[in-house]
Image 1 (tube, one colour):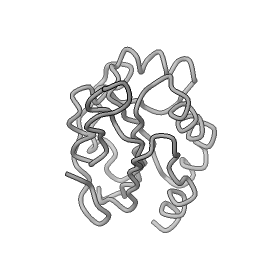
Image 2 (cartoon, helix red, strand yellow; image 1 turned 180 degrees about the vertical axis):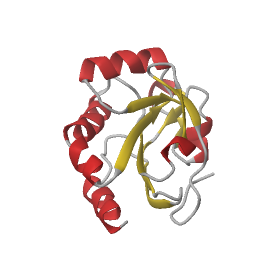
Image 3 (cartoon, rainbow, N blue to C red; image 1 turned 90 degrees about the vertical axis):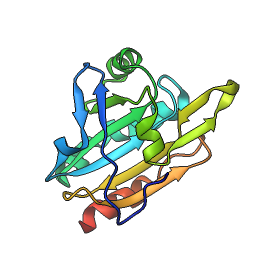
Image 4 (cartoon, rainbow, N blue to C red; image 1 turned 120 degrees about the horizontal axis):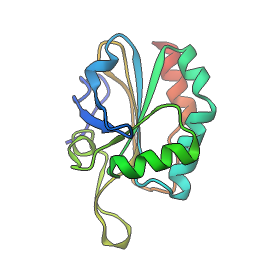
Length: 155
């Protein structure tokens, strides 16, 4: 499966690092940026989320919320969030269903790990429609933050 521009964003219901359930429908009426990342505490993933953290005000000014999703447990994500001082939800897709429904999953990642989220970014508008979709096969690359902002500006 994959998630394409112009389609309804796949529903999700995931636990955040505070062990609260977060659903896509919680963001109805707001723009939502969904970032997927392979693993907490790794170099490029930390860069990706710190880039979001350091620019969070500009997203808020565009009426956009941010969530970041990985297959890490809520417990690992809680430590990662605390260590890096992230102000947005980190959501655990431990069972991999959300990563699969967005087409953002590696069958096999490094060290033979199976079912790890790909680095990806999606912009979902107030009506729940995908307006931007970027799934990276190379985990060493970062999403195009400029294109994400362009998409938000046009909404």
